[in-house]
Image (cartoon, helix red, strand yellow):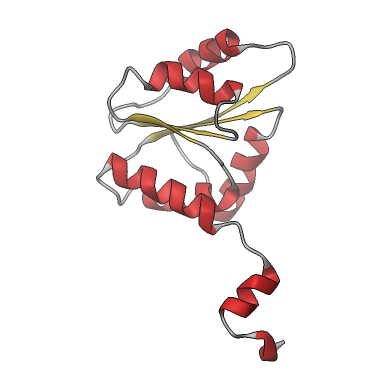
Length: 142
């Protein structure tokens, strides 16, 4: 499976997120980073998304990985994804999410399973050193 992925964020964070993740897992095909800048609106983002989609292989679906629920990238992606099967929008994009989605998307045959992986990994990537140590009873190892 080669699910298409569009990473979209407020400001110019999308491309650095993609670049950082590719530094870890290698170059990825069928992926696009789109930024949302001051002065733009949902309509301009929809246009950017539509232009990106024209260049992508959508046979295995499309994931929009965006920064904030109900923000402009989410709203624009939702306008497109709501109409299509195997298109979805997942919020909270971060490097752990991207690493795991990129590593799992070829071996995962189920689009919904890939969505669950993205959500789980976004949450799993947020940790506190000291809380992790307490949870693992590893404080004496330091």
